[in-house]
Image 1 (cartoon, one colour):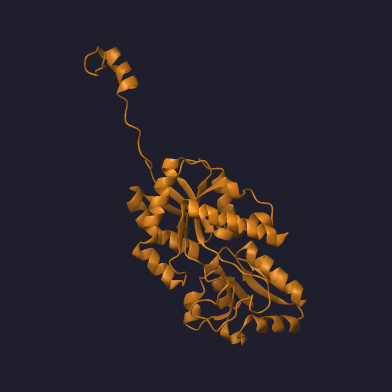
Image 2: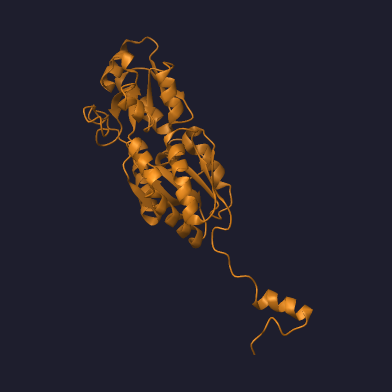
Length: 312
């Protein structure tokens, strides 16, 4: 017998509605999605996330709220994300080493398996930079200056990775290089331009100032020279067994539904080809590299395994 919602008395009709004619299952998302950026306003992660917000909103059909929770190289935002509901409505933006490197060198409130890996945008042209007035042409000049400085040198730091890198170099060279922690790339560049530190590690925020001649690129951290500054060495070419390939990443708490993850992955794929994102990646010299979903998950796990082996 087929039930009809219109052929019963009031009480039976209510029961029939509850059992047979209830509302259809709503598709994700039903409300706004919040992305918490693990770095301060104005840096690369923040700027790219805000550039992607409109395209993400259009793809999802809901508003995108971007907020900042800087600190510990993105780790504060990821720690907070882990405690949030795994419903797809809370994401965090950080950099790949926040999950692939940091947990291997310090005790954190999260691990690799605590997140679903949604998307990665661009590759940071990571570099060490300084004011031209310092007179340094490459990082070899910085090391020489550190050997002559009774109290050593200071540099603006943004991640635990750069602190490990600098500590390794300082130990090898027998010099003192002291980190001055900052809340992100914008602050690191500002500290350098203001003469408050001797040099800085920057994941890419420096690029406009370097292109304008306001900062000198001393060395790149990647496998290849920084695009546009091919005459500058990498740390590897200077004899240090160190390199880094870092990306802007977007993650959700582990355990979100397949439906929510698929919708988010599709939205980020759409955002990655949007004009504002491509223009900003070009401005910051980050290329147009994009990974999403399972491919991104595989890459981040491979990076984590390599970093784990390297720091043992």
